[in-house]
Length: 178
Length: 462
Image (cartoon, rainbow over all chains, first blue to last red; front, side, top):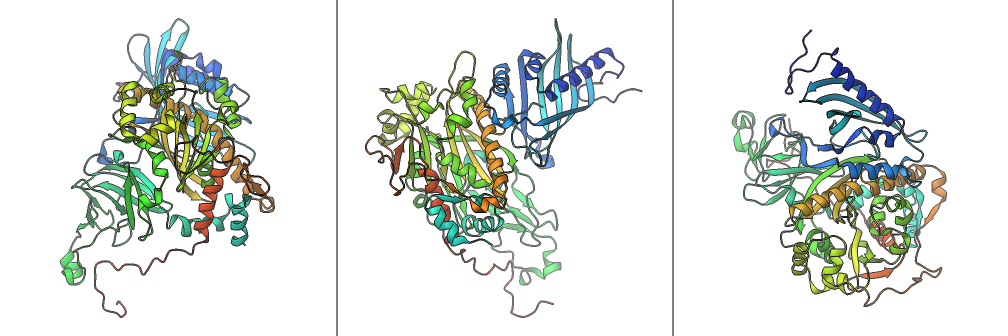
């Protein structure tokens, strides 16, 4: 079959080695996040990473926008992400001690060629987060648009834009990565 | 069954019945006696800069459209169609000259006036059955602005806003009038936390005591140097009008410009601050050596100003956030958190300040993350039976006789109100006394509901 074209052109076929590599990258990344191996996760990012999660808003169909251009939940560079990871590794990051039980479900992966050694990868993410013994668990649903870059050490994440599917988040904070 | 007189008298002696943080009966009183009357923050004028711009905000269950009408005036309109009660605006922001109800197409101008309804002649017999003249979406009973902050009260007889703000207006200027251009707000980030709304409001009002421990991690990683206990206890706590706040002690000997440079402001902004603030406001920074940090304006608007290190080169950048603790129920709160920055600030400063905000506060902020964990846990515990047997001690800073263990600061603190240096729960008690006063008042008389559209002859409708 032929995959449907999108604004990014036609995605690579599922059998394409570049698609398989991109898909495996996202699954391996999710495994690191689920294991709270955040140092390992930082190793998957390029030094010039931009990690962005705009605030979604409810607007009329004709408004022409449904997220805020100048306000995010995250808008991080490597320094900011390192600080977040360092903080979680201290003995005083109370919000994750006891830690949440987190599962990142990654699906609907589509890979697009984006130039030499670069691929745009879209995926759907559902994050399940459970804290304590009886509190209702949180679900965060989002689309992700990633730029993966092939370097000497293999694929690395150079940019991620997270399109969260709620305007009002229903999780107590984002002491987690999506 | 709620024993309100006992709860209020306990609160007034600084002992807080723990169940008030998760009690549906208390929440109903807060709705009917506090939020039905208080001045409540809704939005800032910078969020609706152009004609037709609007945002939709709530006071508990009541939805309001905050619009800038075609003449440039800010209007606050109850978001309910006069005909069948549908929300006439279901988006949270946008630009519109009119709001058309999706149910029967009644249409309102963005100043609230009814512009038209279909088949007026056929359906109502024209103006005899329904008089269109003068019909409008219900305006907020009281509305006023200060430094571009838009407040409403559901009480048509609310005191004038300047009277209400009183001495707290002095402190609001540090956050919202750093230059004549005023502040611009971005956001808000919105998220829901399973915590009672009062806890955040009290915390921002004056809890300098939690900072060294709750926020130890941000000192551990070198993000913000100030919260160490040794520095935090040098700060002054002040109570002024309906507000209260915390400050940090600045390094000794600095002049006005030097102190503002220390927290990361560029010289261009410092000049504007010097011109924008009064001699007394400048003296709080230059002579007294205090810089505002967290504060709360009763009931549920909080402000924060901190100055973290935002890059490996050691750049210190200050940021301002406004946040509202929007009650959803006795055990759930929607947090609305805005990034605020002086509208005339250099673009480079705005970028750095935004980064500082995101790292520290808001939905992903490294300070805020640990705060909310505490507040969710308190709310969970407050819902049980044992919480009804426990009055929490909120008497920090007082002797057993109820006297301050240290005298209030005199000339050493230039701002208005009453200030104490060091740890204490003066500010939280001040917030809780206002809360108790509100809960004690009988509900405001609403009067008879207004009939819309027709002078109706008494008698049954057929």
